[in-house]
Amino acid sequence: MSIRRGPWRRGRLLAALSLLLGLFMLLHLRIPNRIGNLGSLVDTFLPWFGLFIPVLLVGALGRRSIPAMIALLLPIAVWLNLFGGLLSDKSHPGGDLTVASQNVGADNPDPAGTARDVAASGVDLLALEELTPQATSKCKQALATTYRYHVVQGTVGLWSKLPLSDTQPVDIGMDSTRALRTTVTTDHGSLAVYVAHLGSVRVLPRNGFWTAQRDAGVRTLGKAIAAEQNQRVVLLGDLNGTTNDRALADLTSQMHSAQDAAGAGFGFSWPARSPVARIDHILVRGVEPESAWVLPATDSDHRPVAAEISW
Image (cartoon, one colour):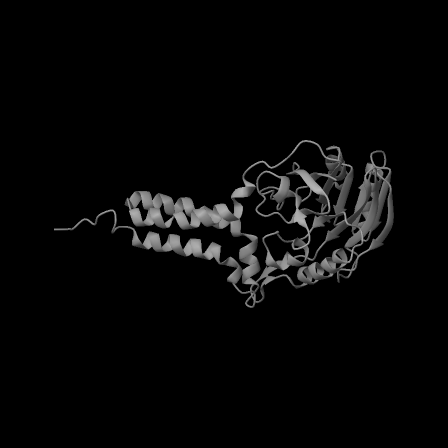
């Protein structure tokens, strides 16, 4: 004769898994980077660990386990504490300046069309990254009637409806120039704008989550922005990392994300067809984001991101 366990005694394994998931997300910053940058890899995809919650919930309901359902409160509370604020729409009407960033992509079959698609959204400042010499020439022609001013340094550029000055490359330790700094003159005063394309990251069998070039670029760019004399600063670009990633702390500690502050949702931008991470960013200091959003996909493998900022 079998003895049926009561609801308080069933599902102990499910309860243990729920507690482990909650502690894993709660203590994710304690995961070290010493072995294959595992901590940064977890940081990057941390929101997706929330998908285990409904799986565990189905199991708890199927087992009719009270301990498993109670234990689920921990991962639910942790996930909502980390990401619940991103689910609501925090945008406000108005804004003094609209900015956008698009990684054009070196393999883009129609870089000019990509640039025109983003420009059609009416942005005042358009940052483009991963420009080849051919793409740069085509984008200059395509955007000439919309933007009176533009600057290009290496593989990054900025197109503007407002005057630009004091443009200079920013060395982020790459073989080619992949970052610039310029001043935008507005009716409200000057604005320092940085455009950057940080080094790529790779998941390699021997090295794990390889981020050496990107991390070095973060540190160098962070120093440049920390030394910036203008109180109002905007950073546009492909940072090849999410704001959850501890490796971006040299930037996120002194600037805040327009998407986090004034967007709705996670703002995933890569890959374009089925985005799973936000690695394209608009970070600000000294100005306030009023709204932020992800624009429709173009022929690039990244989706463009945009924001309205105000003084």
